[in-house]
Length: 311
Image (tube, rainbow, N blue to C red; front, side):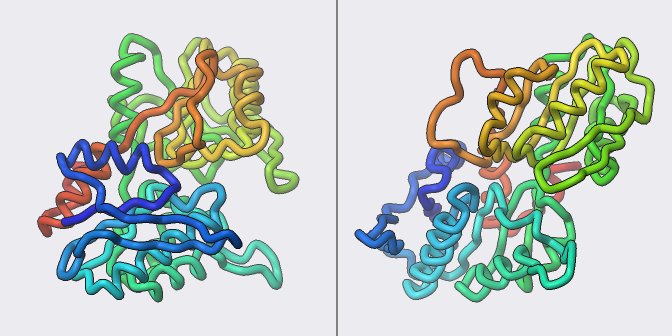
């Protein structure tokens, strides 16, 4: 087994290697003067089971091209099996046609990864479960909920917890987390989205009075939804509001918006690397998913069960 990493999230790739007690494959992933991507693998990978670790986060197109070219280089170097490890799968929110003459970009990206030569895909918390069906190769969709639930139990075990879904579409995810938290009660934020990136909270479905609320979502981008939901929960009598999200996209002024919101803390995993550490006084905290990914990679290589990770 060998692990190769692009440039999108090297700290996570190194942490996975530490968990597996192995080294990253020696490879050069660099740019020519005109920004063309060039990949050179400096080790023999013939007949090897190779895992390419690359989040297709910002800059999404550059990181996607790095992934595709890494896969092509390995295929031409006669790797036995190539698994694309995508901690964060970019373009996942474009999983359907929201209007006429619009693309389904998630399917296009799935086709690109398959055509490049990947034999398998491993990801965490795909925005929509049906994206697994966009791939014509085996796809494993891991869940960050065990990592999130363990952190909540370690920090808030003595509080009256209430799990809150920020929208109706996230109820299944919220119910799954509530089940892990000893069947904590559930509430839903009913909101209306006027345009992309903006949301208006309408009302809260559920009793939040006197409780510590835990908002749960898969992606936090502009953070507008979470901040509006936190304000509405506080107005309804919540004691404190925490937010847990798997993928911290945090584009634009998201960090500043969180800092000035009613949220006590926003916790994200390290599936996306911003390139710089969070400020010391930030409300944003990061959990690592390296052990989760490392264990899944080990099980895939050993042909063992991955689903049993979540039993």
